[in-house]
Amino acid sequence: MKNILHIISSPRAEISASRKLGNAVVEKIKEKYSSAVIKERDLTKDHVPFLEEKHINTFFSPEESHSAEQTEISDYSKGLISELQEADIIVIDSPMYNFSVPATLRAYFDFTSRTGYTFKYDENGPKGLLNDKKLYIAFTSGNIYSEGPYQVYDSNVPYVKNVFGFYGVSDVSVFRAEGLSIPGIQETAMEKAIEGITID
Ligand SMILES: Cc1cc2nc3c(=O)[nH]c(=O)nc-3n(C[C@H](O)[C@H](O)[C@H](O)COP(=O)(O)O)c2cc1C
Image 1 (cartoon, rainbow, N blue to C red):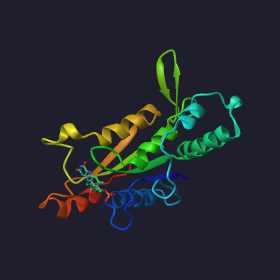
Image 2 (cartoon, rainbow, N blue to C red):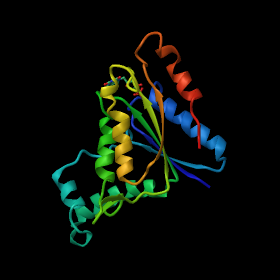
Image 3 (cartoon, rainbow, N blue to C red):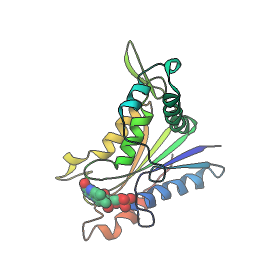
Image 4 (cartoon, rainbow, N blue to C red):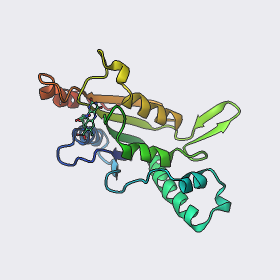
């Protein structure tokens, strides 16, 4: 049985392109693994807070010294991390928002990047602690970043890959529905992206 974690980051609901692509990836995974258990982490429903000093102080201090408030903050972060730890397959909807990921997703990474849980440092440098997982990135954008003059702005997918690579997740497949604002391309971009989904 495979545990699938589907991370949603677009605040749009019905018309969200990244949800559509991410949902299509999840459907294809279900076709392959019929007993798969899907868990959704909708970052637009339960907002992960933006980092404040109290959060940073919590994440960078030993558990045994934590106040009641810090214990609550740490437990919340560990709850998010445990979903990643339990997942065999992670699907992440990652739309391009102002040359980055949506702020909800950035906040999520701020609460899941914790030494001793998702990574650690040893004498060889950083080491990811989330191993043997598969990551699928469902990327959508108005413009085209995988090739052409705007490739230098391709800052979303490499960033998501780098964060998960730092966590130890190196088996990554990326599906892109790009050019969703470009007439002549937008009409078929999603359909082509969905057709191109392969689950390994
Ligand atoms: C707030 C906002 C910012 C956006 N910024 C960019 C951008 O920087 N580059 C781009 O190519 N498209 C941009 N777009 C277009 C989106 O990437 C595209 O519509 C994508 O499909 C949105 O995914 P969603 O429908 O799941 O929210 C932006 C859209 C929104 C709503």
